[in-house]
Image 1 (cartoon, rainbow, N blue to C red):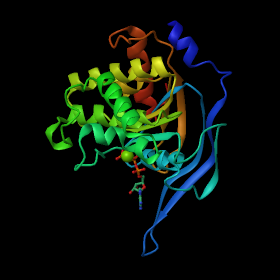
Image 2 (cartoon, rainbow, N blue to C red):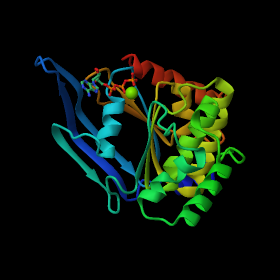
Image 3 (cartoon, rainbow, N blue to C red):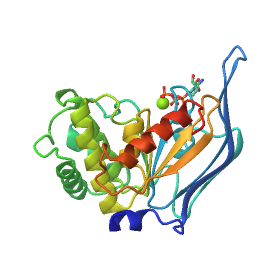
Length: 262
Ligand SMILES: Nc1ncnc2c1ncn2[C@@H]1O[C@H](COP(=O)(O)OP(=O)(O)OP(=O)(O)O)[C@@H](O)[C@H]1O
Ligand SMILES: [Mg+2]
């Protein structure tokens, strides 16, 4: 275990968020019901990097939306830890690109600061610093359509970090990029997390990604989704995908996703 890992995932850290018996049912106009989430219990502690894996349609995006305050649970409860507030210090990187197409990269990244009344000079300096941090120096004046998919995801991460979030919610942010770009983005995000100690909840379909990034992996059942298993990941970073412990974890998570006992 690296020192950074020890600092970031101790069990005694204060709670960032807690869901107890949370459920969400969507009802269509015709009265048909989709039980998206049921009986979700989870606790995330400050500074943790929690990854969530589950089949498509099991309610992962729905869960992040509840935590972001974009939707409300029908049952159970959600508690945010001290200092966390909806619409203030919780940032969201959505499943699909969400940069404003009519704004430059710099303007996209600084937008959240503009909304918070930060002066133009300060927000531009902060945005430029973040763009440098995610490897996008020189692209400040480019528009989203002029960036590659991986670059847009870097910009979206810089945009989310601009407000200095205490909780960063990421919904399959690297789903649409090639493998080598994905590995680079994973490393960049790990570095940012180790430097900033931000609490992160990261949704992915990809078991490998969940193990590479997470200090804990939560496995969801099929719909209605709930947490069926969790795996502490104490492997040293950067993580070696061909190490025996990594592949053992991969197999255990694969089995629990398909409902097999290990
Ligand atoms: N606004 C909505 N209205 C009606 N049904 C919805 C709504 N949002 C989600 N659902 C349904 O809830 C279920 C869970 O959807 P959700 O998007 O949370 O899944 P997911 O785990 O994020 O899937 P994916 O991995 O494909 O992104 C799905 O059956 C979906 O059709
Ligand atoms: Mg989703």
